[in-house]
Image 1: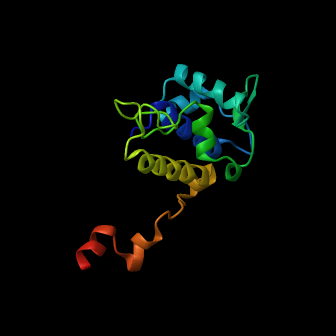
Image 2: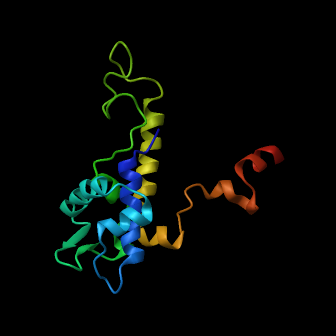
Length: 158
């Protein structure tokens, strides 16, 4: 599975706005382009979609640019990714499972990949822009971090 540049750059840019805006003011795409090393033309495409999704507002004029449409704690990474039309897909077929195999049936591992997609989407929907700024991420599998051991260290101890 691979996240595309659209998803990564949209998250980087919207996080940049949250950090760079002064008193809720607008941030220009050219400033974001320079700070994040993202093409201005690419940012313009992304921000059209982010604005349409209601995640950012635009302001015209000399001090214009973009600002968040809500508090950073209320804007979630999953929403940003969906706004730029990115979806996590770990299966080669669609969600129905039709077409997984040559005979058109659902493959044996289909439900495994679907469960993984669901976990990834849940993880991204649980993280806000503020969480990214604060470097605060949910612990999905707390049993893997028992007593400060990594999963590999726990397996070796057994």
